Length: 118
Image (cartoon, rainbow, N blue to C red):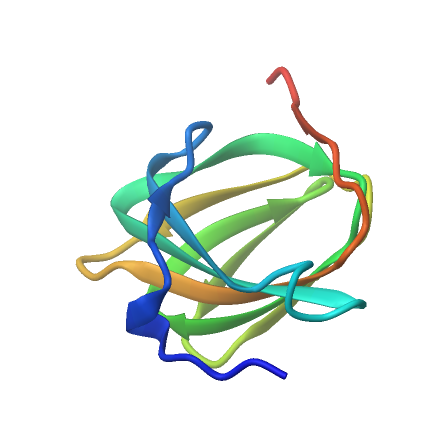
């Protein structure tokens, strides 16, 4: 069992992203099945089109973004939930004046990330 405050977890830059940082709130050392991460994208920031070998379940905490999943583009906002299947190409572009923040749950399994050429 693990209890800690979000302020105790480092917010680290995501090298593939622009103006994007990540906190691993619950990782493989904390629980056997899932990891819980928080992403923060500054206005104008985002992540390029990429794939992951694990699925993503996401909950938008604040802000807005354009999220592409496969061939579809969605504009998401506070309170929206997003499911990204394993292997689906996806990207993020933060919109508006405030940061785009979301929680992301993934299985605690090996995950290979690959940038997809546009």
